[in-house]
Image (cartoon, rainbow, N blue to C red; front, side):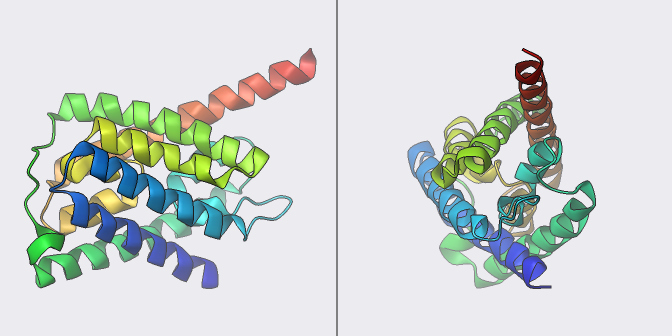
Length: 209
């Protein structure tokens, strides 16, 4: 239960940060979301065990890449997804009720669906590789790379693309359309999966050699 509460809180925190910087420039969004993810990766890495990575508690997208490497059980991901989405959406609704800066209309309009989807895959690839690096070498700060890349490539309300649950939270706050949030979130997960498969193949080839 503590793990799911932590996952919900992580989803809420990334959502609030993303809402707060949705009207800022790309550099601000990249640094804010990237730093938040790096801190959360460090905090949740303390939950890691020999057979289970802790960082999927912060961002379940990382779990998609790590599950392919056997560092987390696939059955663990769905409850974490649910917890993070609940936390993110509740935070987004709260931001919309509070209004003001936390639910501001972004100064930068999101790109079209096709562009968002393509860039989402790129963000996912970076995120998956960063998650594996963070898990392998305990370089927790590396997990923040996906947030930096996401904020730089997808400014405005899509700056939280590295955390798919937070995208839904930002949509709940009214700063992003639901369709854009869903499409981008799915493609980010696809990118994480591709990164996981790539790393799995690299490791298998290295073992053969």
